[in-house]
Length: 149
Image (cartoon, rainbow, N blue to C red; front, side):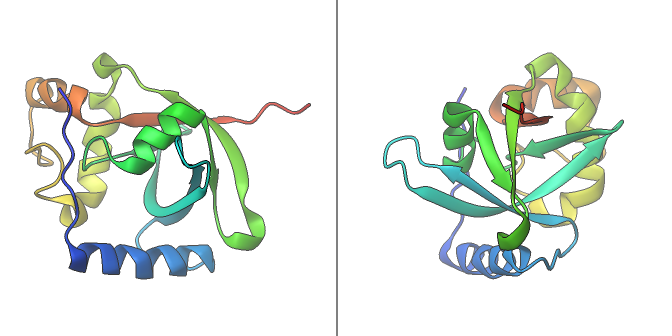
């Protein structure tokens, strides 16, 4: 099941402001600048995301579903994170649906105020069954260190 909650003009404008701040190294409530190569154009696409750490592992969640950045990240397998002067390239591994509830729950606990209405009907009080049911519609990526060489 593919889901994409497209942001409206106002949301896009706010996201652009937060992305620019994140690119300058100013994080608002955990925001991080992400840059990924477009899967068709090859051009760098930039967005702002929330970087979540669970049990020492870093994750990116696309609460709006199959967004452009999530589809580009899936195709590229790598993204760049961080401010302009200190970007780091990281590899991605998509999290299996069965493992997503362990990431979605802490994500909702931390950022529900920001993503409510755009996370497949989930709330911080959602049951494990509800998290599992929505998991296929929410891309989740684990960040991996980029191999040297």
